[in-house]
Image 1 (cartoon, rainbow, N blue to C red):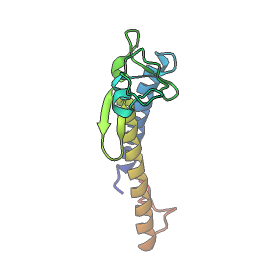
Image 2 (image 1 turned 60 degrees about the horizontal axis):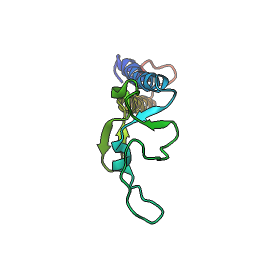
Image 3 (image 1 turned 30 degrees about the vertical axis):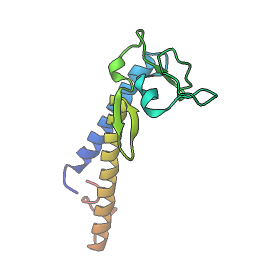
Length: 139
């Protein structure tokens, strides 16, 4: 690993922390609940009544959202930081906030740094170096 590789770990931690801070900001300003786009229910669930008839979804539809979530309405604060970004692919399918995406990027950066540090240490062991006294191991 290069001489500045520890900075990459710090960047990953800062990005993750920024995402967590944005999520906390929107949750704290909305009574400790994450505002969710109304389209969340339309895209992720099909609501049916007891007879199997499909229901129309509105913001007044009594829907049990996952814990700590509510539909955005006129009184929602910081709507732009709520779950409004729709991502659809084979892994991530649903609505996410800007904070969620930053948390994912930061976590991936940290994991990549850990892999690089691990493999650099293994490489130094096989070259005959001592990973506990070799400055190249983690820096």
